[in-house]
Length: 181
Image (cartoon, rainbow, N blue to C red; front, side, top):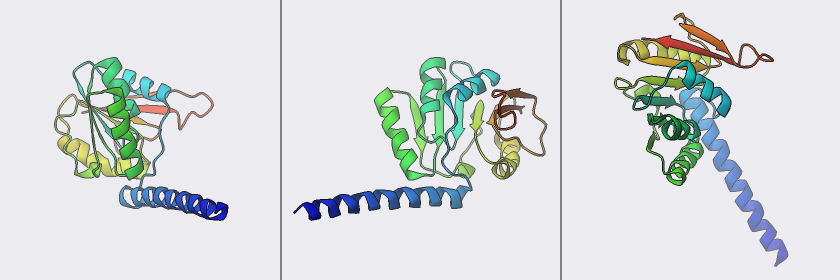
């Protein structure tokens, strides 16, 4: 009897591990971006750099668990949307939004297919290759005055209006880049 219980527990653990691995690999191969979250302190610095105001629309490309969007909605009063293609973080985002009773929308969708024409501020924590692929999308879709704030990685063919260092011990990764359109 005890052996059966252990086998069932082991099977459940194996299935959860398989689910997480498939989720991680799916997002990595589809978007080229694994699920890695930026620190709360760094996000707070990023929205200060972007000068996010109450009522503005903030879009997080690869929003993970949506904790940054919830913060921006609750503390700043921003309207918030996010896109996430990893199933596990997406489900956590939906749960977090519900628990926080936040006015945040998260879509299980590839952000390359998202319409950014109404967005005031775009937040990104994406690899340079992805940022480079997003450059033409930003140029084509973002309205005049829209801002893109990128944590850790810059766009290679666009000069940032501002670069702010947030970590003295890791100057490159800790940079926040601001672009205005």
